[in-house]
Length: 250
Length: 248
Ligand SMILES: Nc1ncnc2c1ncn2[C@@H]1O[C@H](COP(=O)(O)OP(=O)(O)O)[C@@H](O)[C@H]1O
Ligand SMILES: [Mg+2]
Image (cartoon, rainbow over all chains, first blue to last red; front, side, top):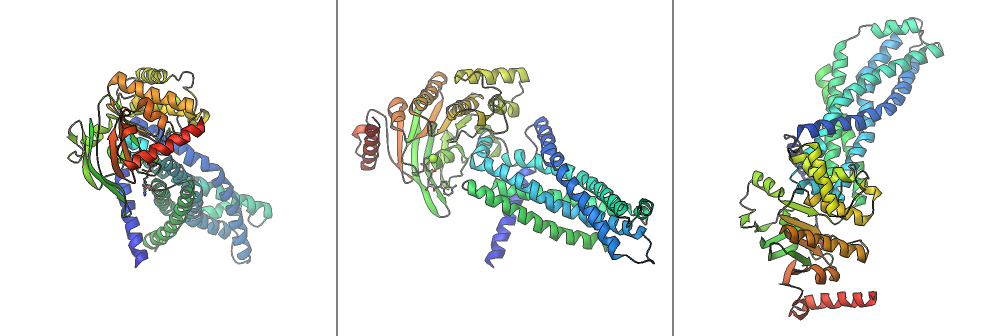
């Protein structure tokens, strides 16, 4: 009971925070500039890690599928088809977002949390600025813009990883791979993937902003809040993923 | 003039501000003194509205904060400047951008005018040649000056300072004190300063409010502070003086 009470209270506080965030910026020019900065910091700076993970996981998926479908009656292109489906439907959207929850989420909550404990948020408030909107707004918008782009990029790199692994190991020759990539390709899956990654982007950025913004106390709390925001974002991503999949794909 | 009327504030059921009534006068440096943990910061933040007091009212030149709507409170904030204990400069902005920040957010002046105004405030606090440095690159004393410059850039009517000279060496501390005092007198603003520093009390304390454990126990000025009939204040003064003598 206690647990439900506190979670409900937390949800209420989160809603109040989001209500404060969703309001007209004091100055649009400042808002756009800050959003661009955040796209740079949260999106562009994540390209490295997304490239690394997508390439290797794409390669590994291909090798594993190929090894498991090692049957003369199953055409080789099936491997590329299966790898494509895995990458598009789950890996590039969900797994990449879970990793971004760790990287970007902890970054956001520790940045905002540090501003809280050093009274920088009070300084914004005292100037008459809506500090929640000023700090979290651009981060949320930037994530909603960047994450779908990162997901498309991740799909692309993952498939390149698969192609290279398939050719180098001789498991799936390039020609078969390309046939597999086109095999019963449904653009709807890409849309589904982008849609859910947009939800995940919102979850990551709003949760970690919320936890950072509501820190009380000192530097220790910053660490705690950033861990907490990552855990909660991940749990929410997994739950939302389940629901979205149930509603959109079955 | 700022009047606090019967202000109380509790955190998680623990009272930290207990029916405080006090007035802070125009064109003067008003000091709130008390031990560490006595509730100075809570009182100051309740006055400016960073904390919502549980009961009581605050009047800014007769304007009751309780009766103000959101818009009016927002407007009132434009008349307030505040210097925080840790300076609270924005880490990601340079010194000049920090000072210019309130103008960037609220004024319609051109960039050149805003820069000129920020520069003027930085000169006022005797800080030249630091414009393009970041807060992490300058000393604590310089950070305090930048914080003062940022607080006065919108020409506030009310200035709040939370332990402006804490963490500074005695010389820098007294420079900061006199800077705040000069700014107060040249523009006739109402200034409220939190401090536990005896040097500040005797150098700039024109009106003094003493609080202990969330209770206001005494108010007066530097001429009668040594002859008060408040035992808590006398013991506070005595221990502070002992420390100063050890220092000498
Ligand atoms: N946000 C807060 N939540 C809970 N307790 C607080 C908070 N801020 C201050 N307090 C408590 O209020 C008391 C007064 O604190 P403060 O006003 O910071 O003292 P000081 O006179 O040193 O500025 C302290 O006991 C402190 O623990
Ligand atoms: Mg304090």
